[in-house]
Image (cartoon, rainbow, N blue to C red; front, top):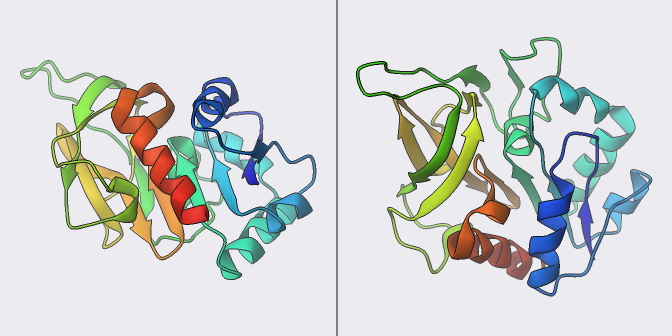
Length: 201
């Protein structure tokens, strides 16, 4: 059973639809303790990083205990940003801290007509092999909608450029994250979700 965490900022409807299409068994936990019994934990998210403050100490502890026990954790969009230490979008909100670094606002480029927020399809430039990207090739197109992004860190297994280059996929041990929305990214996105489910199995 996959725990799909609802903290009031996740795009649960589309993620649920994608998981259902893949035949995944999942539950939206009503208590933090349910995360510790799951085979995998997904933290989705849209909007402002400040919403992650609703993942308070009991949720953080439960998810942290699950991860420490080897349960895979997958952050989507703001959920991936939450894996880091914090964000300049909401300086008072504390990230999960599984990955060192802070989220920063994207740059735009008027000459290249690159606007912020970054909305639409863009490519994943692979930086080594990753379980989350199995079956895909560098240059795969996925769907983004965001104004803030993670720095390129050692955990970055795919980067994307929109005026500046940022981490679009991170992976380390049983920690996974994507800045884009796999549930809205066609076959490539479904492949990434399927790969995560395979890790959980």
